[in-house]
Image (cartoon, rainbow, N blue to C red; front, side):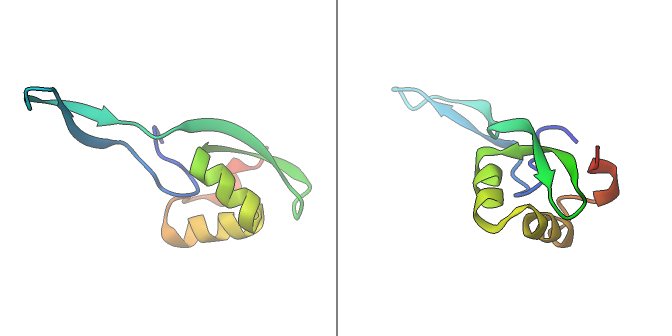
Length: 85
């Protein structure tokens, strides 16, 4: 999985650079992704996720277990057993 947040599902978007003369050229908007380790208290292990800044705030707000549940039901995280380290 490249350039997709595993918690929020944010991914690359296409758009335009617009110059002063209104000339448009294609560009990409990429999410602010980080590979981050989180301590998963229920399993007593670390979990490595590729998350955006918004995903980190979501985990801080609702907790890792709830965020992982929500990501699986939304289809952003397909196999939860592969992320345990």
